[in-house]
Image 1: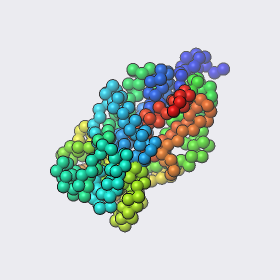
Image 2: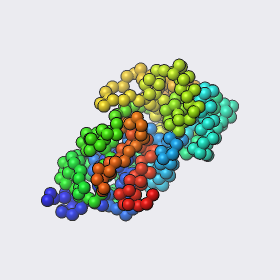
Image 3: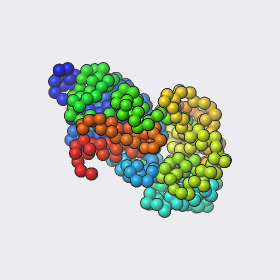
Image 4: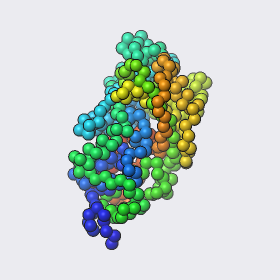
Length: 384
């Protein structure tokens, strides 16, 4: 019997979690809150993937109605609980969706009448200009204000969350370790074998190392997105910002009947943006700089390049929505995440005590904590 590097011949932990991105860390928190000793294994020396290459935007409003929206609401609440304990600053509260077109305003009006519109306020152009002058330079026809969103600086928040889990929640995180295989008794790694009665695999965008056939059966591919950081515009945004393009991408809006008319208008007026998966999110960092994106290109192995033409489409939407010239670009990067055409996430059971969990919609920051609570409930046989 192979020796367990984490503790002789006994078990390494009550649960082993493969992957230290936001989904893996969320599972570690869910385990710790149930009194379980969690061991997290990750191949990288520090957080380096999609979890730190995004907006840090915990999006609730616009998530698909039903399970995804409920998960986002719950995950937002967990962020609220954990952030102050972990020294994570919540930089922005809320979301402003700017509608430039009559068709966009109609989508927002329909959304406001749904369950998900509770707590949101729909403003006409005049009221938007009065309440949010820095957002009204683009003369929006309507503005949907949501109080539900939170925004953190993901490249700082993920390391701080990991450090807090280790320091206060009894979670062990081992890095620079490749997990080569998983069975019902434990995991085989580049650092030896680790044993645990429960195992959760959160592979991110690695589709080939662990359970490749099961991942392939989910129809998963990869999505590359473009991200930009712009210089301080000289004013503070009152909240995160989205524009018309998001109303045909985020399913909470896009699945409303009113979105079809908007989609036809956008195909006629902004076909290049739609063809490149461009929509607009703008958030602001503590130093005043803006994180702006993004685009979506799909493939088994997306190329590593960031064409200027795609960035220009993002900045064109920024100019139209906010009514100002984009400040200078001070940083550019790409992100890669798992994507599936017909599901936002999946949870598979290769064995009764093993769960393979993947977010396939770029909503990890928004839904991971709730997903993790569901996974631990399954593994522990808790009733729904």
